Image (cartoon, rainbow over all chains, first blue to last red; front, side, top):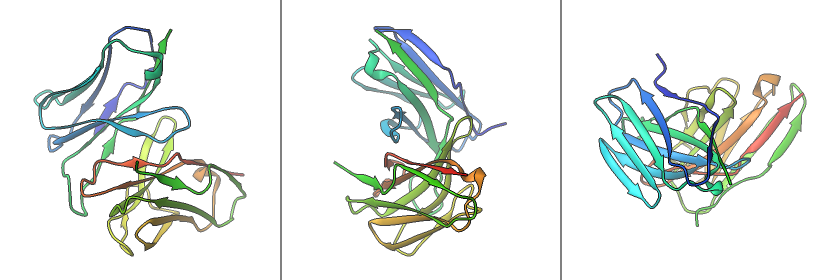
Length: 114
Length: 112
């Protein structure tokens, strides 16, 4: 079983739709959960960062972590064409020291159509 | 704004050539990383460094080496490039929170 699984898509939605992006994971030691957004021909950039379970909201974006189900989600409300990008989930058991490791999902390609 | 600059956006090299990929960050970050990104395989960590002259192997270090002589600069070296090293290479840096990565724009390497 892969450590982190993410549906690669592609996902195509109309402007204004609510988008749900998801990852599942197998390592119960993961405590730190992130979403990175990567525009075409650019490097990824950090979008959301959460610790342990619960929700975190930032504008139109909500990150949700359910550790009991080993499932994380990113919701985008009122999606815009500028949200078209690849979204990568990432997670780690540790946040410091030389032995930490960040494990990425393979990314979901999202297109928001005007 | 944090800036991570990769010296070359696009490179074409021949099999067996030695390849240097340079990365410079301007925010005095302790940690620097080299990833490669391939369709269907995602981001894979090659090497990282948490201090000058320190390096740690990532998940796929074979065929690569790194150098960090100055805090702001982290170089990836392909001693003898092979076609299976054709990929997008991404450099990243982070400060006290090593999980908050700032990425460069990537270097797309083609090995013929």
